[in-house]
Image 1 (tube, protein in one colour):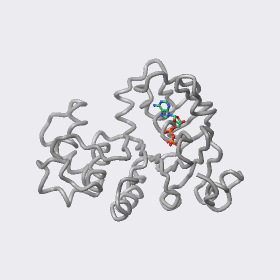
Image 2 (tube, protein in one colour):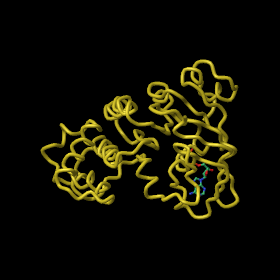
Image 3 (cartoon, helix red, strand yellow):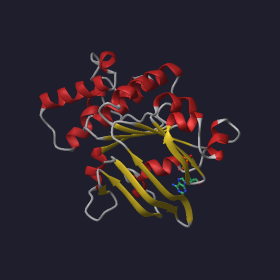
Length: 250
Ligand code: ADP
């Protein structure tokens, strides 16, 4: 069974259509890269997977998005619990203006966890999973905003992991980072995919080639081609994919 199953998905911003008949399945414990030129609908699509579009006025969706076989746009879906299952990390690290500890404990507390020992454990495990524990374990009470950009992004990953999601959505998570921080996060993603299913928007094609199992190429709101990353990069079926991959546009 696919973890994510998208069928006939159309999305409109007011009268403007931004996604056309998207059909895509994502398997567990894989990294899927969404690529394509700016404005082709990658972020819009990513946001449909945990209903982040709900907060954008005048957005209308048709078709279905199933996560573990449940239609997330169905009548009885609670968006809060959906977001607990599907964490998100954004382009610019956005820690809360709180301590490192409180950033990580925020989500679990929101979901009712107030036991100090349990929270300590969650904070440590989440920071370890995000490969940040060793760097911050002695400064947990310090403001998260004092960390470097790369550390802040790993903190945001740890914060997403703290509520034990099944899926991690990442919207260009390394585009604001230096090459060393980027390499650290890429390494981290390789590890995280053994536990989580990851969907990542990236405009860095080398990155998509390095880290993803499957790649989806979007153009003007359409999913042009979706296949094993090696196929997309070495032997794509669609001429437009080949032209984009070889740098002829975008
Ligand atoms: P990408 O992530 O590939 O750069 P986006 O998903 O951001 O593309 O944008 C796809 C299309 O939807 C673009 O035409 C963009 O202008 C439009 N769009 C994105 N966000 C909004 C919004 N909040 N309101 C209206 N139009 C939007």
